[in-house]
Length: 142
Length: 433
Image (cartoon, rainbow over all chains, first blue to last red; front, side, top):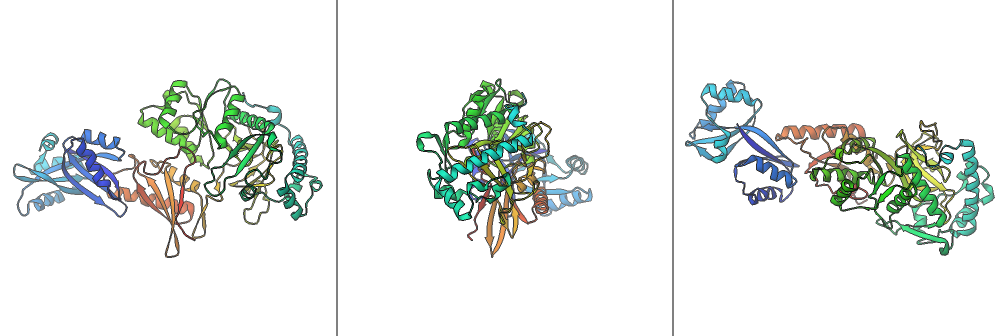
């Protein structure tokens, strides 16, 4: 399991650059990111090397921030790799809220960040089916 | 102490009406004799001072509006020579020429007396430490409260508006028990307290007396819960005297109007007909003891209703309902009247929504559009778009059923809506009609 930082962004010029600048100035490294956007607002989701500090810094800078539990799953970096994982999740009736790719790799595998409805069930399913996911500490160090 | 002046505040209605009629007659004679603008208006309406024989005859007199004050800028409506005028206050004049008001020595005494009643009604005593964060200066709020607070011999901190961190430091260090400011500024102070990691429970603050802008019952609940105080509504306007025209008592069921100094009516703002007690309309006030600037039937633009039923507190003076809005704050969206206070009520009924909002009115393709900006607090925020969109949909639905008009809800970042240290700006109307 891993902690994702989510930030509310108004759909206005300069907001994204402001968040990333605040993080950059604090020496926080972004390891993965995705943006969900609507016509009015966006939600920036990031995995960073120090989520607790990133959370505090963004909050102090006046952003609406939350921490969310996600799982970083190792996916074989070959054609059909992601499909295989998704098929097994589907068989186990695991609902995915959203997912995005991680920038680095682990043991030559690609990493995909999943937000699922039931995270405990997802973890036990992955263990059962031999799908590797990376623990929090390792992830931030990648 | 329950009352400041029990004899006046709990006077029988009969005695009160006798006093009112005597004072009204006197006032009408004085303005007719000393203020040409009033004499002209009365002559045009064909009414002479001797025509005022009963309180109902008040209805024969013409109304006075803000425009009359502007037309007679600066001192044209004064009924005393400047040698008798000891104080001048003025509006900021943001919507035109400022309106100027003057006070005699006796006017200041009466005003202080009214503020003493108001502060006492809200539970303040000589043992209170009153932090007065209304602006001092040309605005009547600061000095009005100040004189009343000294009258009851409370300890006054004349902090005036602004410098919020210092306000909170004073509150903490000086042991403020009563805060006076606008309701929107009180909530802003709470936000700053949070930033400073100061908990209201650790302060001595017990009560707040808030006015100078309309605020809803829900806003009261919000302020009372957050600051852990009793919040009282106070009403007044500089054209009449300043703060202290009306004040809530412990029952918080309407504001008692100081009827020994003011006559009140509620009219239909369009037909100008006087309405029965209980009907909502525009408040009209006549001063019956003011010397420097007596005002006859002043159209306040504030919308309320009157209630003469006996109050639990024992005061006999009529109560006005909390002001619903101002007829000039009201925006008409596709023919429907919308008040910022209605929007506020809807928002505060949704858990987690902060009372920071802004109405933006625009017209596209000849159709009015209302956008309501709502700040997304941490409590409301979700990392899932679906949940935020659901929140927007809930607010939209509640808003539509309460306002009777469709509003577009726009979620905005926290603290992106401008905070006010005085009167909050709630509406931006971009229509060019």
